[in-house]
Length: 205
Image 1 (cartoon, rainbow, N blue to C red):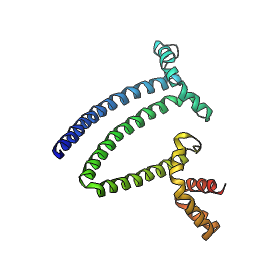
Image 2 (cartoon, rainbow, N blue to C red):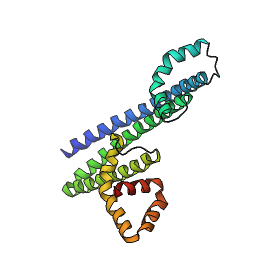
Image 3 (tube, one colour):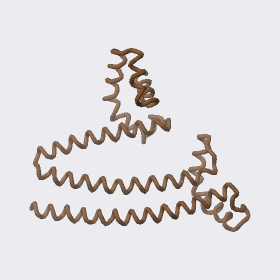
Image 4 (cartoon, one colour):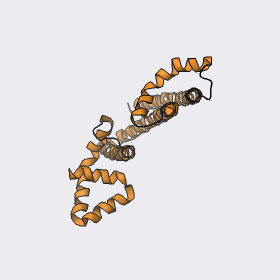
């Protein structure tokens, strides 16, 4: 039975490795095509390409509607609409990198589960503890990153990180506030800047 389980795991890992290789090539092709489209669209928007040319009319009719949601968000945040192609290209690149990272993450977790199952209940418990600490690290990292963009904690894609980390950060804030007073705020602000300041204000409400 153990041999059958190992063979199934190895078959899954081999299939996942093949998918990862295909995804990497697909990402390179997609990123190159998106870069060409976005650069051309930017040139049309900034009139580096004649707005009366056939290429410009094609992009205004076919490509610009696809970028309209990004353009609206830029305008609401005070950005320049002509920069929408660059944001679209960044989204494609970041999305591709995250997808490839996710495949690697899944592979690592499958290997960890396989080793943990061989270790019995103690191995499973150790794996669960590692998962919990890993999830908290990801939540804390996400909380810091989203604070750089002044994202509201009420947004669903931000709220989860506050829900997971606040039970641990709130006692630390109270301890520093009680033991160090105003200096406690300054000490915690020093290494992480606005993120720590925002977290403390949340706890004061």
